[in-house]
Length: 245
Image (cartoon, rainbow, N blue to C red):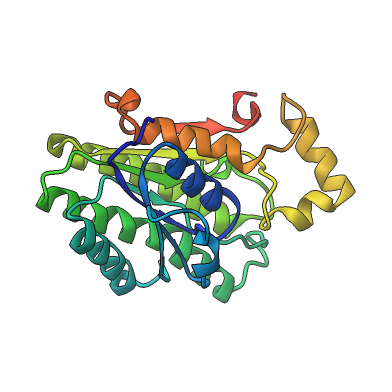
């Protein structure tokens, strides 16, 4: 087991990528706190005593601080923080509304920063050489028409990861990000069901298909494990080749 005796928080863990990561962490021996803005107490039924749930709105720094503080108080440390919670929104430079812009930035960018800061302070206080994993996107590496807020937020997460990795390296805290391509989740369900959009995704993905949440979970295990002890500041695309073109 690659994560034996590790304490982990996964935000946005009620579905999709977050749920897949949290479950695989359990399989790899970690104690995992599932967290989401939606109630997820039913998610952990039957998963054993190493799984628990704490509700949290990551767009609130107070709630994120409370989440991390509660976990450290209960378990004595935090080894792994996965800042996965995020939302999608369509809208380009001409028509993205103020409300959509503010909401996407609050959750997808500020929410990740609050998680990085809270986790880093907790790890420093307990002298834990931990791993912080942020969820960016291929749209944090390249742009896509009609996604100005989402692309902006994810681009910010990518550079936040690089900067934070340098800030925290002296403490032995590693900060990395995963950049998923198009993954089959509730967030992408509608657009992938659109025949033209789905054809575009396949045409621009060298492997020719949308991925599964488990594809991202495997990368998250690697970055959290001691196998990646010399890895920090990277943006790891798991995208079927989208960004290699």
